Image (cartoon, rainbow, N blue to C red):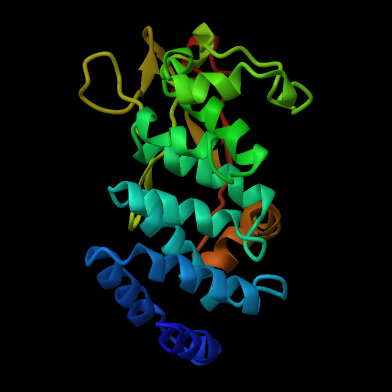
Length: 252
């Protein structure tokens, strides 16, 4: 197994398409070999994670992490935690993403292992509140509640937040994840027949497009890193409303 992993790691920069590497990992995990995916991720992070990241590395590492996090089974969760907790791959920003992944894809009782193993405090803190936002009663999950109620993380920026949702957080549009991507719900009108076009009879004023190349470039720069990392395309456009919208029309 080690020889196969080192071969993949050495050849990664030369690849024009990483689908083959991802398919190998998918097959190994499907056969119950979650350790292969975690070992490959650690080896990739050791080789490329601290340098200017290659797109091949970012793509494969992200796939491995999502594969382990979203595939059912305790062994996959254990290996996902081993991957993100390894010194080579540890990253606070990644921990926040992993917390969202796990809260979306795993049952609360499965996630108690996060609070008894080697996961970082950042991952634990973010996971607690990702679960809270999803309506999980963390006080009723003993393996989570013991950590969440302990005083040692009270200085964390999230430590002062309550362990229940506020009214404004009910129904928050939170992402759901799968191996191939993520999604958000689309807001629908009261009849359920389609997106809002108006609220309470209030209509959105007519609008004229006023996009210029300079404005489009300036707006697109805010998400340029997303496009670069995913080989994506960004479209930014500007519209001028014919008049001020009523307060009730703002959601539309």
